Amino acid sequence: MLLRLLIVPLLMGPLSILSAQSPNVLLICVDDLRPELNCYGKDYIQSPNIDALARRGRRFERHFVQAPTCGASRYAMLTGTYGPSGNHALFARADEMGKPSASVPPSMPAWFRQHGYTTVSVGKVSHHPGGRGGPDWDDEALLEMPLSWDRHLLPAGPWKHPRGAMHGLANGQIREDASKMDLFESEEGDDTIYPDGLIVESALQEMKDLAGTGKPFFLACGLIRPHLPFGAPAKYMEPYKEASLPQIAHPEKPSGRTTWHRSGEFMKYNRWGKDPNKDAAFAIEVRKHYAACVTYADAQVGRLLQQLEDLKMADNTVVVLWGDHGWHLGEHAIWGKHALFEESLHSPLIISVPGMDQPGVSSSAIVETIDLFPTLCELAELPQPKALDGVSLNPILKTPEEAGHDAAAYAKATTLRTNDYRLVLHPGGYAELYDHRTAAGETKNIAAEHPGVVKQLSERLNRRLQGR
Image 1: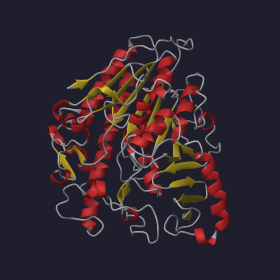
Image 2: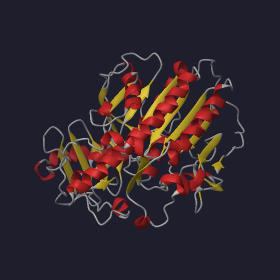
Image 3: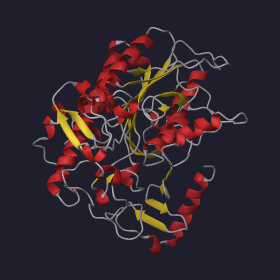
Image 4: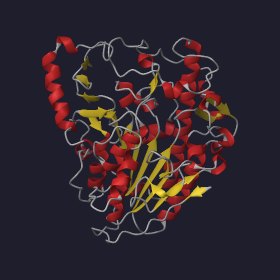
């Protein structure tokens, strides 16, 4: 089954005249991808295609998302604004758009569409793969992002519908009762025995079709892996069977009040009665299967990049690789996301611009997901909507030594990441303060010893999020 939506054209025409050289945009979104990549210093990981992209682009070493959950993080990326903290954020925005008196700023794909781009989404770009609601996420009347995409696709194949594909295992297995679905597996077969293989096949065809239109395109491809459950073709597990993995950093459950949780999303799967916080061998198995999913996702990235080359479009296409949030692999005794520790909020961001200065030189500047919208507008020479909260990263793309800015995020509490500190501010005023200049990092709360720093950073955080 291939969900395909043709949206009625906007009443207004393009707001600007595009030049023949207006760059295409290829946005690759990868679910639950922490910086567990060779180009981010994890030398036991095989990620040759993303590494190659990093060599010809700008790798941001300290990119932070706005929320440690898929829906809210993707809302921030697609709107360039701080927003709600839940997974229903984009659907709530769509509901607001349906009100007669509503005035909702355009999303990033809607803005590019209004300015003459063809916009296509394949896979998981918004929260639901395919961008629809309903019991199986395929109700054409419930759009997650109205007026944004010319086509919004999800090739479900044997998984029958987007909900089935989202948590699917090999050859059409659909999650109904998570306790009866294995936490991980590695089955023999080609890339299409898991949903991402079909997603990329559809994206490759879309790219080929777009190449012949004479119009610039904004193509977003969203990969599901390495999201739970950790399933990937067996060939991607081979490099890790005998691999030695480094020790888990600070694996102890934190004391005191934090945003720690019991890893409910992870623990609900069939774990064969094992707990990685108590079973070191099982923890290694989990991490190896996560790594196999990363290498599987990397292979899909390689197929997309090769298609750009084959179609001779690489020289006029801006490529962005973005992880929607981080993921704990045992740090702080968490297996999952949803916390406001570094591991949940730190994700990869790589931007490659044809002909850019100093390709392959990374940036240590702190940047945020909301910065993507204004960055891509500037690269495409489009005006920027007034409502954006982010700032363009083009100064850093030109000069990697340029400074960044604080990064704010939110869940049940709010947090600010600066060059030196992370502040977590809970409802009622309780604070966690961590000093990233020390080895203790986010294992020792120093808020009580530094009330002045807490006060200063709290004011900065509240100013950043006051319009949210």
